[in-house]
Image 1 (cartoon, rainbow, N blue to C red):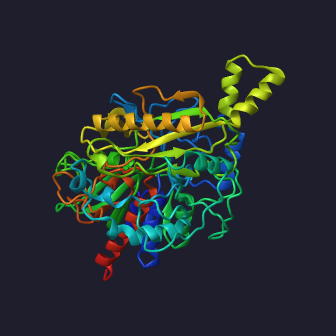
Image 2: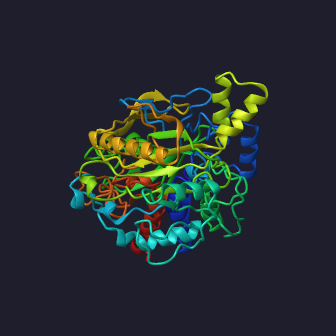
Image 3: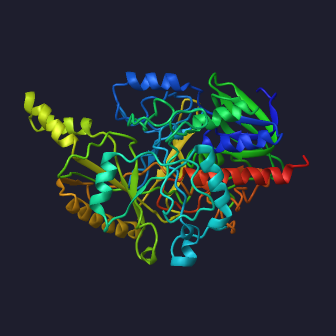
Length: 534
């Protein structure tokens, strides 16, 4: 075993959250070692991989896969890396590489609304956070500046300062849908890290409509930028380093992390402070693997909370043809939302939700459809054009209440390094099912106002997850019901911190990355405060 590396702080996971934290610590003078299980791949290579892919609808297609740092794959065949145990499959997609999963996203960077932080107190359901919105607001703004976020200023999340980025001009689809749904439905600009003008050395969005799986010109923020900034700030980065065990001393202090390189050679790194910044599935997996005589259930898991309260946004969708040409495919794929159902007293009874209005090109989906219906020749071309110009696709982001039965555990399956793969149990409660009924009624009303035909709802009782994985490392004031304290510090280990969406006690109704970024910056400040004389 190689025992050479040590630093003030070891960070495990070079996604956006671990990278932001590492950058802040390094700029304050700390020596930081950043371990990433996957490779470092340049954006140019990723763009070429996507262009050459036969599976353009697969958002994982640009990103390399390795059996040594496996990740879920579903195309062309599922690899069953995630062992499904529950009544609903939790079909997570995430990327194990330098920069993490926010390489492939639509750059939605929403704030929570204040009542998301006090849901139990306000509505008698869910959990309260260990602090309120006002505590996180300055960090929200700081994260927005880093990412260049713009959006609608009056979207339910109070602001101390205006957005740092002006809005990207509305697409024709957004203009028409906004006008025709008013006043019954209020359509807002999405909060996104997408450039309307050059920003931080990157160009303005030019409407490629390829935000997912990869912006070809780098006009939107992503974790690859954050990871590169960390490296440029003096952080030592080791890629292809699969951490498989955390070591502790007799008092429970974490003293080392052991990892395999891709040659299957084991290495040991030491530090005074450790930060886990893998995602909300891989971090619980590491903690559960790190068993010892003192901690037979794993690190930070004395009360069996690690991996519990797995949440996402259980989503349903609808597609239909509008009675006029709206031309999806021009501009960003995710420009706007209906946000009026994110908060209110109804949350006592059913799940709140936000309705995402997609602007993604519908040509591929429509082509499959009309070919299956037997069209050919000139009529085929005409029908593709007719439907692709009118097809609207919408989907909800509905809050899921934390449930300790929904969880990440270890399966009996092993990967190429001999490490256990994750097992997931995921179910949907009556609270969410009632929210689904309300969502479906909204869909019908929206379709009616837009003269919708060929209406196709999601199959009843089936949900897709939105890749907003939260809750499995929940922060809280009570160690009996949480994994970390309000700073992301493990209740059981004073020098072990966790950042990322896993520490979020609740999932709200919006994409979760901005909240995780804000939390990571806040945790970095706490580490600096406690070690400033170190």
